[in-house]
Amino acid sequence: MKTIISSKGQIVLPAEIRQRDGIEAGEEFEVERLDCGDYRLVRRTPRPNEGLVDWLLACPEKGFFTPIESESTDTL
Image (cartoon, rainbow, N blue to C red; front, side, top):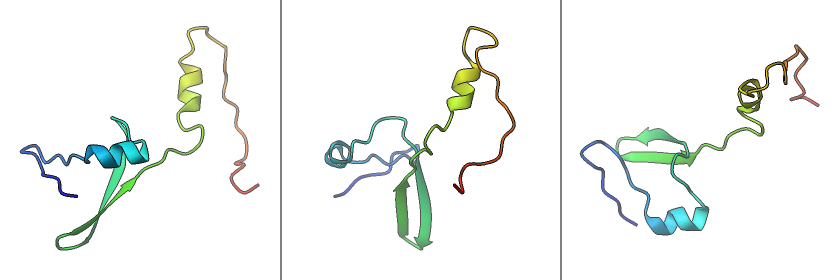
């Protein structure tokens, strides 16, 4: 498939690709330069619960959530 870069440097993913892969506006991608003229576009998938603490801290009821210091569970 072909696409064109806009005057603002934006690349539009064709609708067929967006629909097939469930890509929605606002999703993040990483662009990697492999070589002159060769690039890789990789969908950035947020880590599970990314932003959860900020969301809980924004709760209108003060004191609803208080973060605690703890060890990482990434290695469990």
